[in-house]
Length: 134
Image 1 (cartoon, rainbow, N blue to C red):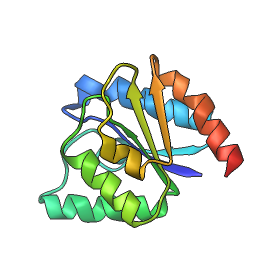
Image 2: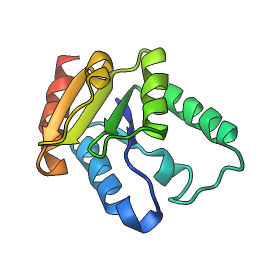
Image 3: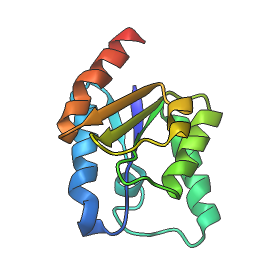
Image 4: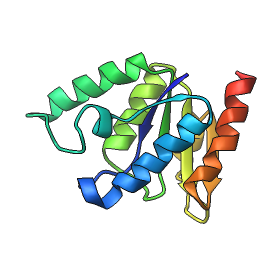
């Protein structure tokens, strides 16, 4: 299973470690991780227009089997669009967030799996269980 992993992106240094930990947890679950910001943009903003960016993101999401989205910071922009695209494509959606963070109800309506964690590595076991059940 190839999983499109998406998390907060502000700049390359601010959340690169967090993104890499999410991808490593997916890989530890026996899945193939894909991260648009890492694998396509190399942690840089490289697209000339938002339309070009979203067209490229959609193509990559179509190539993946599922979407994993970290919503620990209550996103309101790009990740919400990615969730909508995955939902429209009927891809399984894994929503992950830090324990104690309020989860907006609309995520429950589209999520196939919601995982709360203290440490990112804790998402591996539920992902493995989901993968073996499906």
